[in-house]
Structure formats: structure tokens, C-alpha cells
Amino acid sequence: METAEIRRRWLQFFESKGHTVVPSAPLIYDDPNLLFVNAGMVPFKPYFLGQQTPTFTRATSVQKCVRTGDIEEVGKTSRHGTFFQMNGNFSFGDYFKEDAVKFAWELLTTDQSAGGYGLDADRLWPTVYETDDEAFEIWKNVVGVDEKRITRRDANDNYWSMGVPGPGGPCSEIFFDRGAEYGTEGGPAVDEDRYMEIWNLVFMQYELSQVRSKADFDVAGELPKRNIDTGMGLERMASLLQGVDNLYEIDEVYPVLDMAAEMTGKRYGAHSGQSSASSHPDDVHLRVVADHVRSSLMLIGDGVTPGNEGRGYVLRRMLRRAVRAMRLLGYADPALPHLFPISMERMSQSYPELKTDFARISQIAYAEEEAFRRTLVQGTTILDTAVNKAKQATSSEGSGAAPVLSGEKAFSLHDTYGFPIDLTLEMAAEQGVSVDEQGFRRLMTEQRERAKADAKAKKTGHGDVAVWTQLREQGATEFLAYQGLEAEATVR
Ligand code: ATP
Ligand code: MG
Ligand code: MG
Ligand code: MG
Image 1 (cartoon, rainbow, N blue to C red):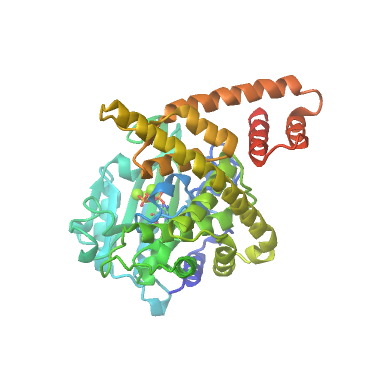
Image 2: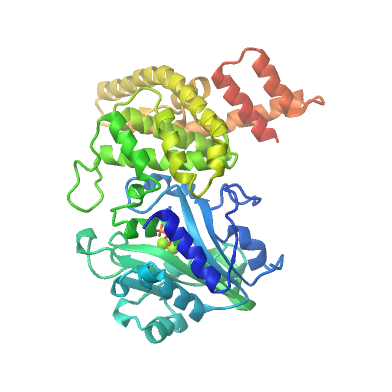
């Protein structure tokens, strides 16, 4: 079943249950605590917090999400993308636990010929919060799941809050058993690769007065209105319904991976067994390319541009990681012009604006690749020399200590050559050299403080823009230009 069809069925199902269909919010949302929207509930927060009253009591959406924190997982696990779509259904003081569970079960297990996803009920493993007997009873007696497949888990896995005083409550997650070839038997507490989490149901029912950590909080009492917030990973469902190993192989992602394989002459999966995701570096790189190209496309589509701070830095990092993965696969020519159009073609089926806006989007991406290519040429030579020196220094000491690249060197690579620190770390590590990251961070902080003071001193009516313009007029190199932008961003 195509991803677009899974999405369509979702919306149709919840609409038939009285939910209002709400379009996805952009990835950048007006929330100072968030770099990007990272869950379906984010646009509904004011309703959950009682700050605004919606015109509906039930809603459903397919929300674009980016989780920067999952970047290191990409390509290594079978189920983490930096960009993904979260299908959600929400109740604002309307239905609660029993209906939320029944809806989920119905959609998951109804035959495909009757509009559902047709998953085998015996392979679904729900979890509940350790003391949530109510949810346990619903799964066991109302739905009829064998209690051997219902796991109780503690607050680290099955309790939701916003990390601050406010609403909170237990969760119930639904896992799908992918089968013996994916790992050890025994349920999600034993193996989260074999048992893949597909859907999280959050039962918002308490007012928390204190939240010290995920598993350490005080409950002040019941909420006056109880809410439901759920999230199902669209790509994860697609991987199951398309019978593929992982979410980089689904219809919305795989064509980019396939093109990258063709360009680099690599055969994806050449090193894997029959079923389980291969951790061979070539395969991981190909997945990284496919994931990052799509995420970058979606981010630029929603107005992010590459930069050295915050959101812009995340985008820059993803574009550069994609380009670098292509280089590691042996492809040194400009790669993005071959990959972006393919991702756009796939994604514009659900997001047609990507097609109409593609000239702008692609231009931003390709310019960043060009900038990175210039950076690489200069930076790599300097880094290699520095790495060799660090190695020589330790071997002549003869102390057997591991070689370390100084914070100063890493800083000058960043500052003068625009070589991102994560790249320095990665490339040094590949040669068995570590980096004094603390020293680097200290120098970065010092530089920021200087930039701030400098901008203040120069702030004579033209504000921070003046600093930037001045730098540019001095014929600043590309990297000085980055610095200017950074100063601009910090004084704002
Ligand atoms: P995991 O434990 O696998 O990292 P999670 O518990 O962090 O997932 P939730 O915050 O509960 O995920 O999000 C709801 C649903 O969104 C998950 O059940 C999953 O299906 C999907 N999801 C979460 N993170 C990702 C991701 N990085 N890529 C794809 N889907 C995701
Ligand atoms: Mg997670
Ligand atoms: Mg989880
Ligand atoms: Mg979860």
C-alpha cells in the first residue's frame, strides 16, 4: 500500500469517527521552545493547555515532523528518519481511553479490502503505564488482547508530560512483531527492533505540579477536561505495509536511495543477509543520503535556509552530511541536482507546493553544495596535516596515549575555513584521532562574546545589519560572511 494511500485511509477513518481534518502546520511553528515541529500535537498545544478553545472537540492530521535528535540514528536503525510524518487523532475533552484504544485497534486490524491496514492482530503488542489498570483492562477485556502480549512499563517509556508543570498522563504504545528474523522473542521490553513501535496513545488526565525528570514528578490532581493525543509513524506503517525492511526503503524515500546507488555504482544491500537492515557503511551512507535529501527538501520548502545557527545550522548539517555521504561512496561531483528532483517528485504527491516552489528550493540546496565543495577542498588538506601532526606528536612521545587534535586547530578550521565541527570530529575519528571539543567550545563562546560586544559598539542606528554589510563590502570571503551572519544572529 502506497504511503499516500495509508495517509488517505487514516484521514478518512477518523473523519468517519467525527474528527475534523486539520492540515499539517509548517515545520517551523511559533513556539520558542522548539526548533521544529516534532509531534502531531504541537499545533494543538494551546487547546490542550486550555489557552484557546477549538471549534471542534475531535481532530485528525498528518503532521510534518523533524526530530534533530534522531540524526545519529539515521541509517542505523530501521525506523528513525530526521523528517517523518506523524498521523494523529486528538480529543479535546471529548472521548477518552476506551475509544482511543478501540479506534486504533479497528484501523490497524480491519481488512485492507474494508478500508483498514489489515495488520495481523496476533502480532500487535500493546504496552501500558505500570499502574494504569484501566488501560490494561481495556486492552484485555474490551479489545481481547491476550494478556501475555500486554506489557506494563515505567514512566521512562510510558508517561507523557511537557517537562514542566501542566498536563500529563500515562501512555499506551502499540508495537508490531516483525518476526523471528528481526530479533529476540519476548515483547517490546526485550527488543525494540523486532517489536517496532508504531503508535503512541497519550491519555492526558492529570495536572502535574512538579516535573523533575521523565520519571520523577508530582501529580496535583485530575484535569477538569481529559484529552487524547496520539501519534502513529506514517513511514513506519508504510514499511510494514510495503513489506520492506526499514523506512528508507518505502515508496517516498527509496527512489533517492536507488539513484544514489546508481550514481555511486554501489549495490544497496549487497552486504546484508536476507531480511535484516545491513550495517555495512555503504548501506548506511545510502540511507543517510535518502533521508537527509528528503528532510532538506521539506525544510527548505518550509522556509529554512542554511546558516550557522539554530534551524539554519540543522539544515546546513543535513545537506552537508548528504553530500559527504555521497563522497564517501565515491561520488565527488555535484550530487544534489540528481537527487533533489527525485525526492520532490515523490513528496509533491502529498505536498504539491514543493513542485511549484522547486526552482527556489533547489537553488538554495545546490548553492549550499557548491559552498561546501569549496570548503572541503581547503579544509581537508589542512585537517589532514593537523591530524598527521597530532599522530606524530603522540608516537614520538611514546606514551601510548591516543592522539588529540587541539581545540585551537578545530576552531581555526571552523573559523577560517568554514569547516563544521561535526565534520572535523568525524574525519579525525576516521583516522583514530580525537578532538579537544571542550577547548573548541570555549573558543566559540569567546568569539561570540567578542562579536556581541563588537556589534554593540558599532550599533549606530543601522543596527546589526551594518556589521554584516561592512563585512560584505570589505570583500569578505565566504567564511567571513558566515561569521557575519552568526554575529547578526546573536545580537538580535
Ligand atoms: P522511538 O522510541 O522508536 O524513538 P518515540 O517513542 O520517540 O519512538 P513518539 O514520540 O511516541 O516516538 O512518537 C509517536 C510515533 O511517531 C512513534 O510511535 C513512531 O511511530 C513515530 N516516530 C517517532 N520518531 C520517529 C522517527 N524519528 N522517524 C519515524 N517515525 C518516528
Ligand atoms: Mg524516539
Ligand atoms: Mg518509544
Ligand atoms: Mg513513543
